[in-house]
Image (cartoon, rainbow, N blue to C red; front, side, top):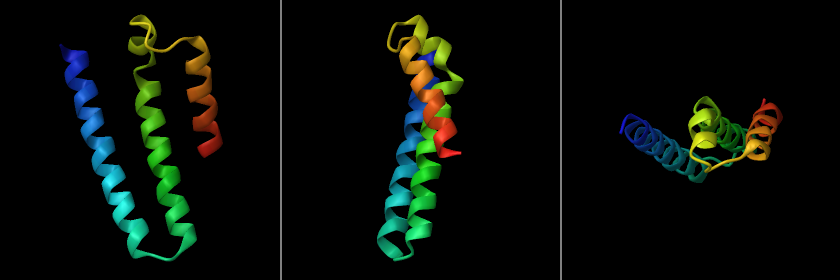
Length: 78
């Protein structure tokens, strides 16, 4: 039950971040700002997955290849 609550909380935070980023993207013409928000959104979502990767692997939702992909994408964002 705890994992479900944490996953739901993460989902709400990521959705709010996405909505805010879309609002900023529609209000600005500055491509650097848009790119920055998109990278932050991607980094936040991937970091949330990576923090709980053990749970994802344990329930077979992700496999080892997925875990490596997530970590590679985090490095790319940074």
